[in-house]
Image 1 (cartoon, rainbow, N blue to C red):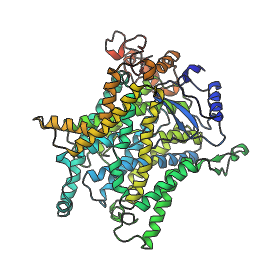
Image 2 (spheres, one colour):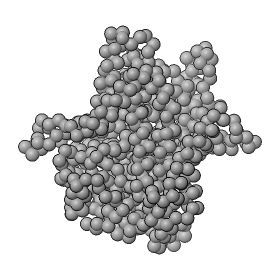
Image 3 (cartoon, helix red, strand yellow):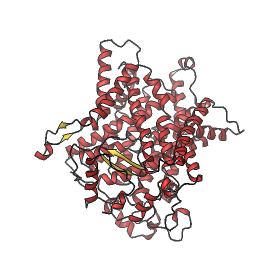
Image 4 (cartoon, rainbow, N blue to C red):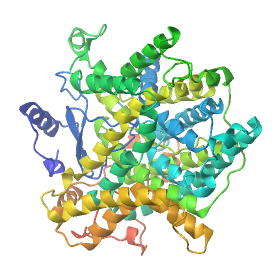
Length: 629
C-alpha cells in the first residue's frame, strides 16, 4: 500500500488512534485512499462525529464509530457476499431506522411553508412518498449506480432553497384568520399549488445533475472548489434553519430540553458503553455493541416520546399543549392504511426560472457531498477507490432519482447518508443484499400510510430538540472540512469568516426585505431574491470568488496534498463496480468508451473542452478532479 495516500492527514491525538492508522497502513487488503472525498451533511443524514477511526475526506478528516477494542478490519460480509435472509432483514431494518430520523425532518419543516394545517392528513402522505422514493433510489444506487452499499434519503441541501422560494411574497401563507375561513378544498389547493412549484424546480434543476454526470462536467466544476468554498456553504445549511428550530422548541421548552439532554448524554457521555452480544462465536461474545453510539437518536426519541404519551394519558399536559401525543391525532385517523404514490399526485408541476436556479444551488451542494460519501463507503467496504465511471453513474442515479421524486411529489431531492455508512463500520456487514432489503423495507413502509402518520405525529417540541442536535452537527461537518487548509493563514481565516458572515447577513436581509429587488422584470427579481435568500449560496459563492481571486500558495489552500495523492494513485479496474449482466455487452461496442457512466469509459480523444484536456495538474488549480485518469 502506498503510504502517500495518507499525506496531509493530521497527527492523531492519542496512541490508540496512532496504532489504528499504522494497522491500516500495513493492511494489504486496504486500497489507497484518494484525497478526493468530502463529508456529507445528511448525512442521515446525521454525521457521525464521534471518537474512533478517522477517515480521509476531500477537505480533512472526521470520525466514524468503531466497536470497543475492535481494530480488526475484516468484514463479516463483504459487498458481494449474501448473508442469511434473517440477518439481511434485521440489518436492513436498522438502516431504515438510521435514515428515518433525518428524513422526517425535511417534510416536517417543509409543510408549514406550504401553508398546511398541523393536523392535515396529507402531511403523512408526503412523508410516505419521500420514504417510498428513498427506497427506490437506494436500490438503484446500490445495484446500478455506484454499486456501493449506500443509502439514499431526503436532503437538507434541497430544503434550504425550497424554504427561500416559499418566502417570496407570492408564496407566503395568508393570515391565520383568512385560512380559518377557507373550506377544506381551498386549503388543499393552497398548499398543492406551492408543492407543484417545488416539483417543477426539483425536476428541472435535477436534470442539470443528470447532464453533468453524462458529460463529465462535474469533474471540471469540482476543480474550482476548495474547502474555502465548500465549508461556508455546508455550515450555512445548519445555520439557515435555526429560526425553524427555535419555533418548535418554544412550544414546550421543558420537553425540548429533555430531548436535547438525552441526545447529548447518549451520544457523548455514554458512547463507550455497550451491551454484550447474545450470540456468535466466543470471541465475538466478548465484544460489546455500542448501542448508545449507534442509536442515540432512536433511544432518546423513544424515551421522550413515551414520556409525552404518559403525560398525555394522565392529563399532566393540558389540552392544546403541542407536546401532547394526541395533538396530531387527526393525521393518524385520516391517513389511509395503504396508499401508492403516483406521478403528479398533487397536479401538474409548474416551472419558474427563479425557483429552478434556487434549487440548482442545492443540487450542486448535494452532489459534492455525495461524492465524498462514495469514497468513504468504498474505503469502509474495502472496494478500493471508486473509478470515475462509478462516480459519474452514482451522480447520474441521484439526479435521475431526484427527477422521479419531483414527478411523484415528495417535495425534496435525494442524497447519500453518511450515518448509514458509519453503521457498516459497527456491524462489519457491507453486503449489497442488506441494502437491497433496507430499500425494500422503505418501499413497503412508504406504502403504509399509517406508518408515515406515526412519524409525522411526533410532538413538535420533541422534534425541535432533535433538530437542535442534528443541525449543529451539519455545521460541524462544514467546519471540519477546513482541516486540510492552513488555518494559521490570515488569508484563509478572512475568507472563511467573511463568507459565513456574508451568508448570514445577506440572507437575513433578503428575507426581511422581499420586495427590495426591483429590476423591472418579475422573473429576474425572483431569481435574485431566491439566491440572496439562500444563505449557503451566498456563503459558498463569496468563498469561491475570494479564494480564486486572492493570491495564496498551494499549501495555504490545501492543494499540495491532493496533487501528491493524485500522482500516487491511478484507477484500477474492480469488477464489483461494473454493471451486472450488461458489462460484457458494453465492452463489445467502442462507442460506450465515450460515455462517462460506462464501465469502459476512457478520456475522449480530441476533445477540446476543459474537462477533457490531458496534462499535469496545476498547483494553482483547485480540486483535482476524480475524473482524471
